[in-house]
Image 1 (cartoon, one colour):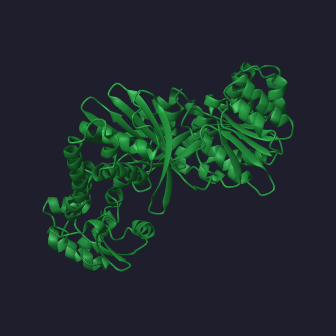
Image 2 (image 1 turned 30 degrees about the horizontal axis):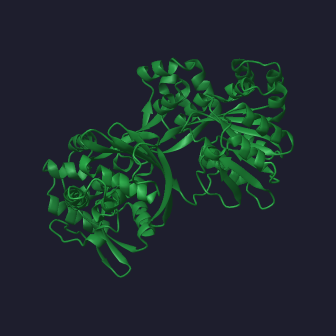
Image 3 (image 1 turned 120 degrees about the vertical axis):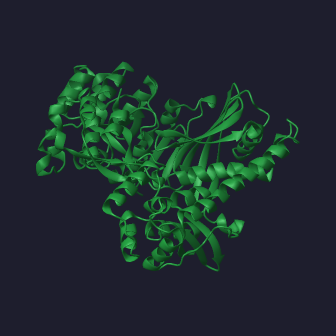
Length: 574
């Protein structure tokens, strides 16, 4: 998809007379039908396809290639997996030695070229092709998957119901499962859901926290796909009535990935959910997590303390574990002993002694934590404080000279303190040991490729006004960001949103970042805890000292163009 600015230059160089009004109509159609400018120009007869792309190739200094009817070897085509080819609008059509020939609709997309150079390990030679030719070539990926499904349907009909191992080892079943796994990796999914229905099998991916339907498979291949995944995860093939958990690892190009597998019997078969974990992924820095300067300083001060508790709180899927691993990454130095007890171990961290709980044999958070204290630790990470026993041991560890990191499930930072008291922990222990509490959510980031300016309308103001004091919005943003002179009024505030493009799957979002509420336990908050103050009283006291709420942190990031107001409202609704 050639950028509009490039297309305008080509039209001028090639002497095409496209009026400003025709250009505006073309742009509107391109957005409406999710097509590129050049496709609409050809479709509406404003340019001749062959001459336009020949001229474009000359202007861009790349050769033009015709993919229609061209024979592309399967091993060459598959050098770039289908999902990547579709996202980056590129097809590998030939290879010789260390060189790979790539056909693209936008040869100026150097970011994609560099990405493919790293992924393939080959030197790309770029060719321009037409959008129609590229679509034709991309259909070959779909045809391959359809061929595999056809073979599976034919062979599965010949396999007896009990011979699951044979079905799972069929090349076509292996290819289907590999396609599901590879597609998920390149789409950036965090989870794969394989859901049996009455007449089909539904595949969904969780991408940036939102489940997205990807494909449906014929019901007849269900048993083969389930058996294949069970074999990979070393689970029992003949067990269909009891939940099972397992794990396996694969390597796709340079990426090493672990898949955590959960199999659950449901009415129409066995549902499988696989969590994708990138092996060897480096912990994020505090900047990458999305902490603003002042909250970041509070966190840095807290982890410098030799003992006490750092608690991270939020609902399931809010990124608590990622935050803990990032803090461990900063603390992980040769001179300290770090031990963890987790459920499950999400990432393997070199230099950290990680153990996983196993309730079946009596290895719980509480028993694991007791054992860790006999291992001469400096820093302890407890995956989650779920009960009074674990809370008391963790707090006692913090009192006796250890730095303890853990998580709780509460909606905001202030609620965490009364929650510990409700577990039966004496107030003075909570007040004495807690250093800082981090409450968080994850919001989707605006796709940088389709980002555009947007101003608050009446509907947006009304929705925002239901949960936030609108009169405080401009002063808040003025204090935390740089406002233009014309943005002193609410209706003039400039925000951003994504219109949706092929790179973000037409969602307008790509990737996620945290929004935070950081509660520092100072003398006043300590006094409030000892007085058994309510969460509202603690929050009011912290707000008077300048604590940003999760909503305010999100609104600041929306003004900075990182996320959207609607996304912040979506994740902060209680």
